[in-house]
Length: 433
Image (tube, rainbow, N blue to C red; front, side):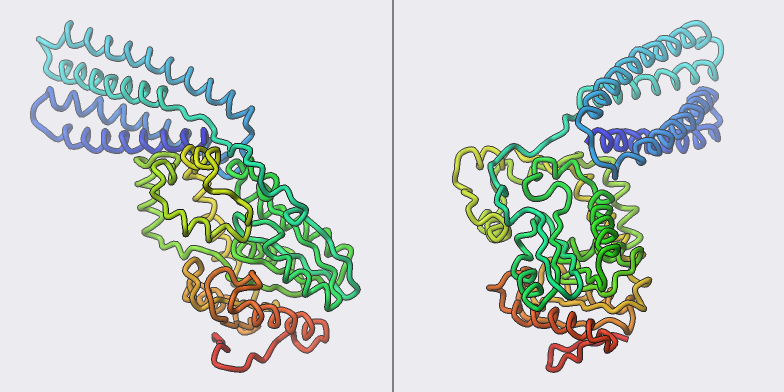
Protein backbone atom coordinates (compact mmCIF):
# COMPACT_ATOMS: atom_id res chain seq x y z
CA UNK A 1 0.00 0.00 0.00
CA UNK A 2 3.01 2.30 0.36
CA UNK A 3 3.05 3.21 -3.34
CA UNK A 4 -0.65 3.98 -3.29
CA UNK A 5 -0.08 6.10 -0.17
CA UNK A 6 2.62 8.03 -2.02
CA UNK A 7 0.29 8.53 -4.96
CA UNK A 8 -2.48 9.71 -2.64
CA UNK A 9 -0.12 12.16 -0.92
CA UNK A 10 0.93 13.46 -4.34
CA UNK A 11 -2.70 13.87 -5.46
CA UNK A 12 -3.47 15.86 -2.33
CA UNK A 13 -0.42 18.07 -2.81
CA UNK A 14 -1.39 18.56 -6.45
CA UNK A 15 -4.88 19.64 -5.42
CA UNK A 16 -3.47 22.10 -2.87
CA UNK A 17 -1.02 23.44 -5.44
CA UNK A 18 -3.80 24.02 -7.97
CA UNK A 19 -5.95 25.76 -5.35
CA UNK A 20 -3.01 27.89 -4.20
CA UNK A 21 -2.07 28.94 -7.72
CA UNK A 22 -5.68 29.71 -8.62
CA UNK A 23 -6.36 31.77 -5.49
CA UNK A 24 -2.99 33.47 -5.91
CA UNK A 25 -3.79 34.58 -9.45
CA UNK A 26 -7.08 36.00 -8.19
CA UNK A 27 -5.37 37.88 -5.36
CA UNK A 28 -2.78 39.35 -7.74
CA UNK A 29 -5.63 41.13 -9.46
CA UNK A 30 -6.68 42.86 -6.24
CA UNK A 31 -5.75 46.50 -5.54
CA UNK A 32 -4.49 45.96 -2.00
CA UNK A 33 -0.73 45.41 -1.95
CA UNK A 34 -0.90 43.06 1.01
CA UNK A 35 -3.26 40.77 -0.96
CA UNK A 36 -0.96 40.95 -3.97
CA UNK A 37 1.93 39.85 -1.76
CA UNK A 38 -0.05 36.88 -0.47
CA UNK A 39 -1.15 36.10 -4.03
CA UNK A 40 2.39 36.11 -5.40
CA UNK A 41 3.56 33.64 -2.77
CA UNK A 42 0.50 31.45 -3.39
CA UNK A 43 1.27 31.32 -7.11
CA UNK A 44 4.98 30.58 -6.61
CA UNK A 45 4.42 27.93 -3.97
CA UNK A 46 1.49 26.47 -5.90
CA UNK A 47 3.57 26.01 -9.05
CA UNK A 48 6.40 24.37 -7.08
CA UNK A 49 3.91 22.08 -5.32
CA UNK A 50 2.32 21.08 -8.63
CA UNK A 51 5.72 20.17 -10.09
CA UNK A 52 6.70 18.14 -7.01
CA UNK A 53 3.30 16.40 -6.99
CA UNK A 54 3.48 15.46 -10.67
CA UNK A 55 6.99 14.08 -10.22
CA UNK A 56 5.86 12.05 -7.19
CA UNK A 57 2.79 10.76 -9.03
CA UNK A 58 4.97 9.62 -11.90
CA UNK A 59 7.35 7.82 -9.54
CA UNK A 60 4.59 6.13 -7.56
CA UNK A 61 2.60 5.34 -10.70
CA UNK A 62 5.39 3.13 -12.01
CA UNK A 63 5.02 0.89 -8.97
CA UNK A 64 1.26 0.84 -8.44
CA UNK A 65 0.70 -2.15 -10.72
CA UNK A 66 3.83 -4.11 -9.85
CA UNK A 67 3.98 -6.97 -7.38
CA UNK A 68 4.63 -5.71 -3.86
CA UNK A 69 7.96 -6.71 -2.32
CA UNK A 70 7.49 -6.67 1.47
CA UNK A 71 11.18 -6.02 2.22
CA UNK A 72 11.24 -3.11 -0.20
CA UNK A 73 8.04 -1.74 1.30
CA UNK A 74 9.56 -1.80 4.79
CA UNK A 75 12.56 0.20 3.55
CA UNK A 76 10.36 2.63 1.64
CA UNK A 77 8.15 3.18 4.67
CA UNK A 78 11.12 4.21 6.84
CA UNK A 79 12.50 6.44 4.09
CA UNK A 80 9.17 8.14 3.51
CA UNK A 81 8.58 8.86 7.18
CA UNK A 82 12.12 10.25 7.47
CA UNK A 83 11.61 12.53 4.47
CA UNK A 84 8.32 13.83 5.83
CA UNK A 85 9.94 14.63 9.18
CA UNK A 86 12.77 16.45 7.39
CA UNK A 87 10.16 18.39 5.44
CA UNK A 88 8.50 19.37 8.72
CA UNK A 89 11.78 20.89 9.89
CA UNK A 90 12.01 22.82 6.63
CA UNK A 91 8.42 23.95 7.03
CA UNK A 92 9.34 25.46 10.41
CA UNK A 93 12.16 27.34 8.70
CA UNK A 94 9.72 28.64 6.08
CA UNK A 95 7.41 29.90 8.82
CA UNK A 96 10.34 31.49 10.61
CA UNK A 97 11.49 33.17 7.38
CA UNK A 98 8.02 34.55 6.73
CA UNK A 99 7.80 35.81 10.31
CA UNK A 100 11.19 37.57 9.99
CA UNK A 101 10.13 39.21 6.72
CA UNK A 102 6.90 40.35 8.32
CA UNK A 103 8.71 41.74 11.36
CA UNK A 104 11.46 43.56 9.45
CA UNK A 105 9.53 45.04 6.54
CA UNK A 106 5.88 44.42 7.17
CA UNK A 107 5.19 47.76 8.86
CA UNK A 108 6.74 49.81 6.01
CA UNK A 109 5.76 47.73 2.94
CA UNK A 110 2.31 46.20 2.54
CA UNK A 111 3.52 43.99 -0.34
CA UNK A 112 6.34 42.65 1.84
CA UNK A 113 3.86 42.08 4.64
CA UNK A 114 1.64 40.12 2.27
CA UNK A 115 4.63 38.08 1.10
CA UNK A 116 5.49 37.28 4.70
CA UNK A 117 1.95 36.18 5.44
CA UNK A 118 1.90 34.17 2.22
CA UNK A 119 5.03 32.25 3.29
CA UNK A 120 3.61 31.66 6.76
CA UNK A 121 0.33 30.34 5.32
CA UNK A 122 2.12 27.93 2.99
CA UNK A 123 4.52 26.78 5.69
CA UNK A 124 1.70 26.23 8.18
CA UNK A 125 -0.27 24.17 5.71
CA UNK A 126 2.76 22.07 4.78
CA UNK A 127 3.77 21.35 8.38
CA UNK A 128 0.26 20.05 9.11
CA UNK A 129 0.26 18.16 5.80
CA UNK A 130 3.62 16.50 6.47
CA UNK A 131 2.80 15.73 10.11
CA UNK A 132 -0.48 13.98 9.28
CA UNK A 133 1.07 11.93 6.51
CA UNK A 134 4.17 11.02 8.54
CA UNK A 135 1.79 9.75 11.23
CA UNK A 136 -0.30 7.84 8.69
CA UNK A 137 2.34 5.95 6.67
CA UNK A 138 0.63 2.54 6.37
CA UNK A 139 1.81 -0.98 7.02
CA UNK A 140 1.41 -3.53 4.25
CA UNK A 141 -1.39 -5.95 5.11
CA UNK A 142 -0.91 -9.65 4.46
CA UNK A 143 -3.61 -12.28 4.84
CA UNK A 144 -2.97 -14.47 7.91
CA UNK A 145 -2.46 -18.19 7.67
CA UNK A 146 -5.94 -19.73 7.86
CA UNK A 147 -4.98 -23.29 6.94
CA UNK A 148 -7.10 -23.32 3.77
CA UNK A 149 -6.76 -24.13 0.06
CA UNK A 150 -4.04 -26.71 0.69
CA UNK A 151 -5.62 -29.64 -1.14
CA UNK A 152 -4.33 -31.01 -4.42
CA UNK A 153 -7.51 -29.89 -6.19
CA UNK A 154 -6.41 -26.27 -5.71
CA UNK A 155 -3.04 -26.84 -7.40
CA UNK A 156 -2.10 -26.59 -11.10
CA UNK A 157 -2.47 -29.85 -12.98
CA UNK A 158 -2.18 -31.44 -16.42
CA UNK A 159 -4.36 -34.27 -17.75
CA UNK A 160 -2.75 -35.78 -20.80
CA UNK A 161 -4.91 -36.49 -23.86
CA UNK A 162 -4.44 -37.02 -27.56
CA UNK A 163 -6.22 -34.24 -29.47
CA UNK A 164 -5.05 -30.76 -28.63
CA UNK A 165 -4.56 -28.88 -25.41
CA UNK A 166 -7.01 -26.70 -23.50
CA UNK A 167 -5.64 -24.15 -21.04
CA UNK A 168 -8.17 -23.38 -18.30
CA UNK A 169 -7.93 -20.13 -16.34
CA UNK A 170 -9.99 -19.83 -13.15
CA UNK A 171 -11.60 -16.70 -11.72
CA UNK A 172 -11.11 -14.52 -8.64
CA UNK A 173 -10.46 -15.51 -5.90
CA UNK A 174 -10.74 -19.08 -7.10
CA UNK A 175 -8.42 -21.98 -7.80
CA UNK A 176 -8.22 -24.71 -10.45
CA UNK A 177 -10.83 -26.60 -8.44
CA UNK A 178 -13.62 -24.36 -9.70
CA UNK A 179 -13.11 -25.59 -13.29
CA UNK A 180 -12.32 -29.21 -12.44
CA UNK A 181 -15.62 -30.58 -13.78
CA UNK A 182 -15.18 -28.86 -17.13
CA UNK A 183 -11.56 -29.99 -17.26
CA UNK A 184 -12.62 -33.60 -16.70
CA UNK A 185 -15.27 -33.33 -19.43
CA UNK A 186 -12.75 -32.01 -21.96
CA UNK A 187 -10.28 -34.69 -20.99
CA UNK A 188 -12.87 -37.43 -21.46
CA UNK A 189 -13.30 -36.31 -25.07
CA UNK A 190 -9.57 -36.60 -25.71
CA UNK A 191 -8.15 -33.18 -24.89
CA UNK A 192 -4.99 -32.58 -22.94
CA UNK A 193 -6.12 -30.19 -20.22
CA UNK A 194 -3.82 -27.80 -18.40
CA UNK A 195 -5.26 -26.06 -15.34
CA UNK A 196 -3.11 -23.15 -14.26
CA UNK A 197 -3.27 -21.18 -11.03
CA UNK A 198 -3.06 -17.41 -11.00
CA UNK A 199 -0.40 -15.81 -8.78
CA UNK A 200 -1.59 -15.19 -5.23
CA UNK A 201 -4.41 -17.73 -5.50
CA UNK A 202 -4.85 -21.18 -4.01
CA UNK A 203 -2.23 -22.12 -1.43
CA UNK A 204 -0.45 -18.82 -2.16
CA UNK A 205 -3.48 -16.83 -0.90
CA UNK A 206 -1.47 -15.10 1.85
CA UNK A 207 0.31 -13.04 -0.83
CA UNK A 208 -2.86 -12.35 -2.86
CA UNK A 209 -3.12 -8.67 -1.91
CA UNK A 210 0.50 -8.11 -2.96
CA UNK A 211 -0.13 -9.39 -6.50
CA UNK A 212 -1.21 -7.15 -9.36
CA UNK A 213 -3.06 -7.54 -12.65
CA UNK A 214 0.05 -7.46 -14.91
CA UNK A 215 1.40 -10.44 -12.97
CA UNK A 216 -1.85 -12.35 -13.49
CA UNK A 217 -1.85 -11.58 -17.21
CA UNK A 218 1.83 -12.48 -17.58
CA UNK A 219 1.21 -15.85 -15.91
CA UNK A 220 -1.53 -16.70 -18.44
CA UNK A 221 0.65 -15.46 -21.30
CA UNK A 222 3.58 -17.63 -20.24
CA UNK A 223 1.44 -20.73 -19.77
CA UNK A 224 -0.11 -20.28 -23.20
CA UNK A 225 3.25 -19.63 -24.88
CA UNK A 226 4.69 -22.88 -23.51
CA UNK A 227 1.67 -24.89 -24.66
CA UNK A 228 1.78 -23.37 -28.14
CA UNK A 229 5.31 -24.66 -28.56
CA UNK A 230 4.39 -28.22 -27.58
CA UNK A 231 0.82 -28.64 -28.83
CA UNK A 232 -1.56 -27.84 -31.64
CA UNK A 233 -4.35 -26.88 -31.59
CA UNK A 234 -4.49 -24.83 -28.40
CA UNK A 235 -7.80 -23.79 -26.88
CA UNK A 236 -7.84 -21.03 -24.22
CA UNK A 237 -10.73 -21.24 -21.74
CA UNK A 238 -11.30 -18.57 -19.08
CA UNK A 239 -13.94 -18.11 -16.40
CA UNK A 240 -14.88 -14.71 -14.92
CA UNK A 241 -11.61 -12.88 -14.19
CA UNK A 242 -9.81 -15.70 -16.02
CA UNK A 243 -11.93 -14.91 -19.08
CA UNK A 244 -11.13 -11.19 -18.97
CA UNK A 245 -7.41 -11.93 -18.60
CA UNK A 246 -7.67 -14.31 -21.55
CA UNK A 247 -8.86 -11.55 -23.90
CA UNK A 248 -5.65 -9.46 -23.99
CA UNK A 249 -3.58 -12.66 -23.90
CA UNK A 250 -5.47 -14.06 -26.89
CA UNK A 251 -5.03 -10.78 -28.76
CA UNK A 252 -1.26 -11.10 -28.29
CA UNK A 253 -0.69 -14.86 -28.63
CA UNK A 254 -3.48 -15.89 -31.05
CA UNK A 255 -4.57 -19.28 -29.69
CA UNK A 256 -6.51 -21.47 -32.11
CA UNK A 257 -9.74 -20.92 -30.18
CA UNK A 258 -11.06 -18.94 -27.21
CA UNK A 259 -13.85 -19.74 -24.74
CA UNK A 260 -15.08 -16.99 -22.41
CA UNK A 261 -17.35 -18.04 -19.55
CA UNK A 262 -19.03 -15.06 -17.85
CA UNK A 263 -16.19 -12.70 -18.78
CA UNK A 264 -15.83 -10.16 -15.98
CA UNK A 265 -15.10 -6.56 -16.88
CA UNK A 266 -16.24 -3.09 -15.82
CA UNK A 267 -17.59 -0.74 -18.47
CA UNK A 268 -15.74 2.31 -17.16
CA UNK A 269 -16.90 5.67 -18.51
CA UNK A 270 -14.63 8.67 -19.05
CA UNK A 271 -16.34 10.73 -16.34
CA UNK A 272 -15.86 7.90 -13.85
CA UNK A 273 -12.09 8.06 -14.32
CA UNK A 274 -12.09 11.77 -13.50
CA UNK A 275 -14.39 11.26 -10.51
CA UNK A 276 -12.27 8.38 -9.21
CA UNK A 277 -9.10 10.46 -9.50
CA UNK A 278 -10.72 13.21 -7.43
CA UNK A 279 -12.23 10.87 -4.85
CA UNK A 280 -8.99 8.96 -4.40
CA UNK A 281 -7.50 12.11 -2.89
CA UNK A 282 -9.88 11.73 0.06
CA UNK A 283 -10.70 8.03 0.31
CA UNK A 284 -8.68 5.80 2.66
CA UNK A 285 -6.10 3.62 0.96
CA UNK A 286 -7.62 0.46 2.41
CA UNK A 287 -11.09 -0.72 3.39
CA UNK A 288 -12.21 -3.00 6.20
CA UNK A 289 -15.54 -4.52 5.10
CA UNK A 290 -15.80 -6.90 8.06
CA UNK A 291 -14.76 -4.55 10.88
CA UNK A 292 -18.22 -4.45 12.45
CA UNK A 293 -19.33 -7.67 10.76
CA UNK A 294 -22.12 -5.82 8.97
CA UNK A 295 -21.53 -7.69 5.73
CA UNK A 296 -24.22 -10.23 4.95
CA UNK A 297 -22.29 -13.33 5.98
CA UNK A 298 -24.84 -15.65 4.38
CA UNK A 299 -24.16 -14.10 0.98
CA UNK A 300 -20.43 -14.17 1.68
CA UNK A 301 -20.58 -17.86 2.58
CA UNK A 302 -22.55 -18.69 -0.54
CA UNK A 303 -20.07 -16.77 -2.68
CA UNK A 304 -17.05 -18.82 -1.60
CA UNK A 305 -18.50 -22.12 -0.38
CA UNK A 306 -17.65 -23.74 -3.69
CA UNK A 307 -14.05 -22.59 -3.36
CA UNK A 308 -13.59 -23.46 0.33
CA UNK A 309 -16.42 -25.88 1.26
CA UNK A 310 -14.94 -26.73 4.67
CA UNK A 311 -14.33 -23.13 5.74
CA UNK A 312 -15.61 -22.68 9.31
CA UNK A 313 -17.00 -19.14 9.51
CA UNK A 314 -17.88 -19.57 13.17
CA UNK A 315 -14.35 -20.34 14.36
CA UNK A 316 -12.99 -17.60 16.65
CA UNK A 317 -9.77 -17.16 14.68
CA UNK A 318 -11.70 -16.85 11.43
CA UNK A 319 -13.98 -14.21 12.93
CA UNK A 320 -10.95 -12.30 14.24
CA UNK A 321 -9.19 -12.52 10.86
CA UNK A 322 -12.27 -11.19 9.08
CA UNK A 323 -12.58 -8.25 11.47
CA UNK A 324 -8.91 -7.37 10.92
CA UNK A 325 -9.05 -7.83 7.14
CA UNK A 326 -7.79 -4.86 5.09
CA UNK A 327 -8.56 -4.58 1.39
CA UNK A 328 -6.18 -2.12 -0.34
CA UNK A 329 -8.07 0.17 -2.69
CA UNK A 330 -5.24 -0.14 -5.22
CA UNK A 331 -5.89 -3.91 -5.29
CA UNK A 332 -9.56 -3.28 -6.15
CA UNK A 333 -8.40 -0.97 -8.94
CA UNK A 334 -6.59 -3.90 -10.58
CA UNK A 335 -9.98 -5.00 -11.89
CA UNK A 336 -10.40 -1.60 -13.56
CA UNK A 337 -7.00 -2.09 -15.16
CA UNK A 338 -8.00 -5.51 -16.50
CA UNK A 339 -11.23 -4.00 -17.81
CA UNK A 340 -9.26 -1.40 -19.76
CA UNK A 341 -7.23 -4.20 -21.33
CA UNK A 342 -10.46 -5.97 -22.26
CA UNK A 343 -11.86 -2.86 -23.92
CA UNK A 344 -8.63 -2.28 -25.84
CA UNK A 345 -8.10 -5.89 -26.93
CA UNK A 346 -11.60 -7.16 -27.76
CA UNK A 347 -11.61 -5.65 -31.26
CA UNK A 348 -8.41 -7.52 -32.09
CA UNK A 349 -10.22 -10.87 -31.84
CA UNK A 350 -12.40 -10.38 -34.92
CA UNK A 351 -10.77 -13.19 -36.90
CA UNK A 352 -10.52 -15.65 -34.01
CA UNK A 353 -13.10 -18.36 -33.30
CA UNK A 354 -14.63 -17.40 -29.94
CA UNK A 355 -17.37 -18.93 -27.81
CA UNK A 356 -18.94 -16.68 -25.17
CA UNK A 357 -21.37 -18.04 -22.58
CA UNK A 358 -23.38 -15.77 -20.29
CA UNK A 359 -25.75 -16.67 -17.46
CA UNK A 360 -29.04 -14.79 -17.73
CA UNK A 361 -29.36 -13.99 -14.00
CA UNK A 362 -25.72 -13.13 -13.43
CA UNK A 363 -25.51 -10.15 -11.04
CA UNK A 364 -21.70 -9.92 -11.23
CA UNK A 365 -21.27 -9.98 -15.00
CA UNK A 366 -24.26 -8.29 -16.59
CA UNK A 367 -25.62 -9.42 -19.93
CA UNK A 368 -25.36 -5.94 -21.44
CA UNK A 369 -21.61 -5.78 -20.74
CA UNK A 370 -21.03 -9.22 -22.26
CA UNK A 371 -23.15 -8.37 -25.30
CA UNK A 372 -21.08 -5.24 -25.84
CA UNK A 373 -17.94 -7.39 -25.83
CA UNK A 374 -19.48 -9.78 -28.34
CA UNK A 375 -20.33 -6.84 -30.58
CA UNK A 376 -16.74 -5.60 -30.48
CA UNK A 377 -15.35 -9.05 -31.25
CA UNK A 378 -17.43 -9.34 -34.43
CA UNK A 379 -19.13 -12.07 -36.44
CA UNK A 380 -16.64 -14.84 -35.63
CA UNK A 381 -18.13 -15.07 -32.12
CA UNK A 382 -20.69 -17.64 -31.05
CA UNK A 383 -22.71 -16.34 -28.11
CA UNK A 384 -25.00 -18.37 -25.90
CA UNK A 385 -27.01 -17.58 -22.80
CA UNK A 386 -27.87 -20.15 -20.13
CA UNK A 387 -30.13 -19.90 -17.07
CA UNK A 388 -28.79 -19.17 -13.60
CA UNK A 389 -26.36 -16.87 -11.84
CA UNK A 390 -22.61 -16.25 -12.11
CA UNK A 391 -21.49 -19.66 -10.85
CA UNK A 392 -22.11 -21.44 -14.16
CA UNK A 393 -18.86 -23.36 -13.63
CA UNK A 394 -20.47 -25.48 -10.89
CA UNK A 395 -22.18 -28.79 -11.83
CA UNK A 396 -25.19 -27.92 -9.63
CA UNK A 397 -25.78 -24.72 -11.59
CA UNK A 398 -28.96 -24.82 -13.71
CA UNK A 399 -27.00 -23.79 -16.80
CA UNK A 400 -23.94 -25.96 -16.25
CA UNK A 401 -24.98 -28.86 -18.49
CA UNK A 402 -25.74 -26.51 -21.38
CA UNK A 403 -22.48 -24.66 -20.81
CA UNK A 404 -20.42 -27.84 -20.73
CA UNK A 405 -22.05 -29.22 -23.87
CA UNK A 406 -21.53 -25.92 -25.68
CA UNK A 407 -17.83 -25.97 -24.83
CA UNK A 408 -17.47 -29.61 -25.92
CA UNK A 409 -19.33 -28.94 -29.17
CA UNK A 410 -17.19 -25.88 -29.84
CA UNK A 411 -14.03 -27.94 -29.26
CA UNK A 412 -15.21 -30.81 -31.50
CA UNK A 413 -16.31 -28.56 -34.36
CA UNK A 414 -13.14 -26.62 -33.95
CA UNK A 415 -11.04 -29.78 -34.35
CA UNK A 416 -13.13 -30.83 -37.32
CA UNK A 417 -12.14 -27.60 -39.06
CA UNK A 418 -15.62 -26.43 -40.03
CA UNK A 419 -15.05 -22.79 -39.19
CA UNK A 420 -15.14 -23.36 -35.44
CA UNK A 421 -18.77 -22.32 -35.10
CA UNK A 422 -21.72 -23.83 -33.34
CA UNK A 423 -25.20 -23.37 -34.64
CA UNK A 424 -27.06 -22.83 -31.38
CA UNK A 425 -30.74 -23.57 -31.58
CA UNK A 426 -33.49 -22.39 -29.29
CA UNK A 427 -34.55 -19.26 -27.57
CA UNK A 428 -31.21 -18.70 -25.87
CA UNK A 429 -29.34 -18.39 -29.20
CA UNK A 430 -28.14 -14.80 -29.52
CA UNK A 431 -26.10 -13.21 -32.29
CA UNK A 432 -24.66 -9.74 -32.58
CA UNK A 433 -23.79 -7.84 -35.70
